[in-house]
Length: 245
Image (cartoon, rainbow, N blue to C red; front, side, top):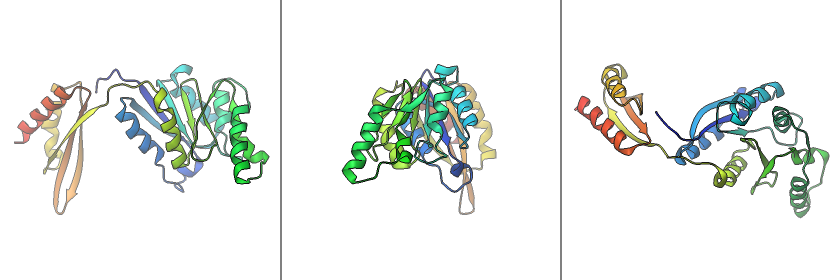
């Protein structure tokens, strides 16, 4: 699909995702949000709690560091435990220092004191922010994320991640949301491949996909057309319908 929209990548960080102990849902949620505001998601990458892997992925994906995408969103690794190393990795990726951020510490301390929670060194790890970063508000549990370069660093806990996404939405550069139409054809994918290819070649500026399914003993295929121009999408769908009667 031809597009002049801003591009984005998502970096999911965590051994628990790679081991299968935790089902990943943040990338799925964010992909829907980005599509709705005209930001083209180009890549989703999952890495372990390994500083070298995190640094390498950030540098490969954040355009401000010579990477491939206009913006990068990370999920996970900014909590209070020893394996929460994302903040340190981000600081290293951007070649900057990291220390307790005064504003982050104030936000966290006020929250803990209001709830009678003991302030410990482990909890204060969540106030360590790379130098030059701006905080991302967390309305759920107070511990902030942060934004540096073109990278938005957010928590892995789903409801906190969602809150942080909502907090950064107003500052994102938006594009044109994609428009899609779908056609259900009760034929197996092998039988629709030829006509689908013909339409795809005629409408090369659009994205055409086929998604097979089984219903009872019958096989069918959902044909989906996506693009930024509603008239072109509609014309392509008419061409598809003509092929399949």
